[in-house]
Image 1 (cartoon, rainbow, N blue to C red):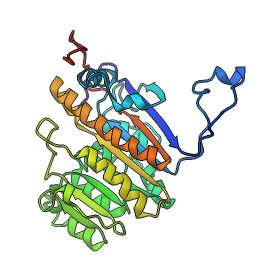
Image 2 (image 1 turned 60 degrees about the horizontal axis):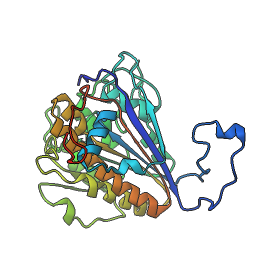
Image 3 (image 1 turned 180 degrees about the vertical axis):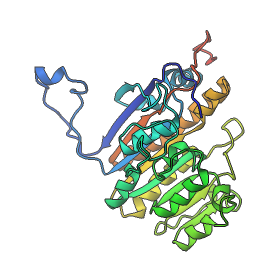
Length: 335
């Protein structure tokens, strides 16, 4: 997917919400006070890490969501804010695959790459590293679960369009919880006759989908790994009534915490369709997806505050569309 952003700036917000913070902290010395973030009290290590990616979410997308939502976003709850300028190894403007792979393996790669280096060598992802360290792991997205961003944390293929190969890579991990669209890439495949959903069940997963059970009616078995497919292909837009990201994000947090007896987890949550609204040059699409993603951020922050041992990072892989705001009204929330 070619991204049309002209500046590719993305906001980064991070918060460590830990109950063991000291009630008082000494005044920083002069040298320390000149360093970024030096006035923030030191925090103990987090047990859980939640990475939330607003795909295509630049500064203007955030601003538009803020103005439309009565000048209130959960993003404003973060005490630490920064900006990063993403690019890929072969292009000034990164795509989602290279952007997410940079997050997942810590190395820049070419546009289209999923979990591989510029010379197509597979590298361990942060999700796979978390698994090896005994942490529970999860993915939640409003795209297909095999789309570029979630795929970059669990798969290793040369091109992001290799959806069926990406789906097969889910059988090569022990991911504990995943939720998103793309059911057809698992059970009605063109490249082979495998039924990956049946294989997941044989591996011990509880597998469900929107075809058989509403997400809000699920009764989870916290002892077994869990997969839920929200659509046969791409999920609906927020404007069409899709409303699962907020409850699914909180469900994933609660599930992963209980699944491994609170030993820690890594979870990636993606608001995927902010990007799609940018590609469509559709302001209503962008803003509705931005507000939907922010609602999920609020649910995750509520979990983190109650848990006390969770690091939440919100970022974007790139901006999409060169989005700009025309004159409007802040009092009437008109964009």
